[in-house]
Each structure stands twice: as C-alpha cells, then as structure tokens.
Amino acid sequence: MEKRTWKFVGIHFAHMHMGDLLRQASEHPNAEIVGIFDPDREAMQGAIDALGIPEERAFTDFEACMAASQADVAILCSPTAEHADWVERIAAFDTHILVEKPFASNLAEADRMVRAMDGGSKTLMINWPLRWYPSHVTAKRLTDEGLIGEVKQVHYYDGNRGPLYHGADKIELEPTAARKASSWFYQKRHGGGSLLDYLGYGSTLGTWFHGGRAPIEVCAMTDLPEGIEVDEHSVTVARYATGLSKFETRWGTFTDPWTHQPQPKCGFVIVGSEGTISSYDFEPIVRVQTAAKPEGEDIAVDVLEGADANPIAYLIGRLEKGLAPDGPLGAEMARIGQQIVDTALRSAQEKRTLPLVD
Image (tube, rainbow, N blue to C red):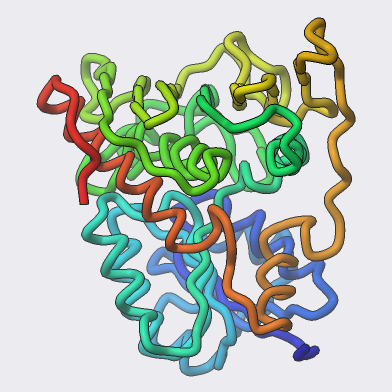
C-alpha cells in the first residue's frame, strides 16, 4: 500500500461538478490541488475563491498547467463531446484521470479514451455521482446478498429542474435565456441534452444492479421542445434475457431531488425473482418487499465513510492499493452503459427498436 500526498489538477470547468470534486480533494488529508486549467479565466474564479487556490496555480494554457503542476491525477470536466480529445492530451503527461460523467458522447469516443490509457500504468475512472448516494450503495449490497433473488428488471427515473438551475455544491442559479443560448448543455455538437446527461447514470448503474449483464435490444423516444436542439426528456426501454427495464431522463422536474423529491421520484426500483427494492436519491431508507414481508419494510441506508465516502477518497484508496476502479466507475462496465446510450440515441432518431450497438 502506497501512502503519499497525491497531486491533483483540475482540467476544464465546463461541468459544474468540478467545484465539488476539487472541494473533496482539498478536504482529503492525502491530496493537494497543484493546478487548475480552463481557457476561460473567469470560469475558474468560483473555485479559486471558494478553495483558496493560489493565483499562480490557475492557468489558461493547458501545457503550462501540466508542466508546472507535475500532477499525479487529473480531474476532467470538459463538455461531453470533448472527453476523448482531452483524455488523449492528458494521457501524454502520464497521469491518472478521473472523468466526470457521462463517459463520452458516443461509443467510438469512449473506446478512444480507453485506448489512450491502454498499455500504461495509469488509471481511467469514470465518476457517476449517483454511485455515492447511500441509498443506491445499500440497494446494491442487498441485491448482492441475494435478498430479492435474481435481478430481473431495473427501472430508473432521474433528472432535475435543468442544468442551469444550479452550480457547484448545488448553489441555485437563475437560468436566463442568454445562459441557455450559450450553454454547451443545450448544444448538440457538444453532447448536450437530458439523454446524454442522465441516461448514462441509469444504464451504467443499471448494468451494476444487473450484475454486468447487457441488454439484447433497445427502444427509445425523446421529446424535443420547440426552439432548442437537444432533448429535455427521454424514455428508453431495454430488453434483457430476464425481461424489460426502463430508463427515463428529465430536465424539467417539478423540484430538484436534493431539495424536495419530485413526482415521479428520482432513483431506482429493482425487481428481483424474490422481491423488490426501491432506492430513491438522497433518502435515508430503501424500501424492500420480500415473500417474508410482502407488505414491505424500510431499511436504513449504509453509512459511507473512508474510501467509500466520495469519488476522490475512493480513487486515492484504489491508487494506494494498486487496484483499478470497479463496478460503474471502471471502463468495462461504463462501456456497456455507453452502448445502451448509443443505441438509445440511434433508436430515437430512427424511431425503431435496435439491437445493442458495438
């Protein structure tokens, strides 16, 4: 086990989760923020102010940032469609990389990211924030323990009021027309839309709950509101050998789930051969039905601490032990999630059911 101070650099601030990840790095006893980069100096100011990052560690030149920081780990929060390009550039500096969700805007780009790291000794981790919700971790533990038998179906609904309503640490913002017009979240060429923003969560964690199984075929439909070029609502049905699972994404929920759960509730319902589990975002319990208790019972969620507390603590723990990321955080399982996303996108465009792409 290698105990040391891990040097972190933040690359690109297009995704608001960069602020959360840098905060976690700043709070970890074995981590140090040695540099941040964005081509737009103003994009970094919030993190500089909130975390006390010295001015000399903020760069608008990528190569200068990497050369000066000599980082061990890069956190990447670029627009989705630029993930592959940035991973290839960062990989040249021989650093570990944590990519904030989603994996990529398509399967070919996801495979480019894996190839960029292939053959080296460095780690590629794809971070899905839902993986750190105690309810979902508890639901996975219970399914692994066989409480509901074999998992047959996974049903997922998730989203929020929209990506412009909040920033880092869920600070509320006002989604003005000007911000919407300029935001990459609403631009097709940059990988925008609720399907690309949220389906990867459901399909990748759904694959986790399914024990690594991939579906046979996929059918999807999106809603494209007038005046914007990306969807704000999508429904995907995936047929597995065990039955049908459903994954629904929504920008425009009545409330954000971290303040008040909207209806439908955001989270997962897992159906097994011998019971069911409902696991909703931010809730302190999971609801379980079994043959012994068909009326259902509430089970308190697990306490996540130490290396299980958040993505930065997890990654440092894995690096110290020389282990690759597992489950939905590893490229193998995330690739199945990306296959489902790609098939769903094509299905929505062609308006027909399609076999899983590869």
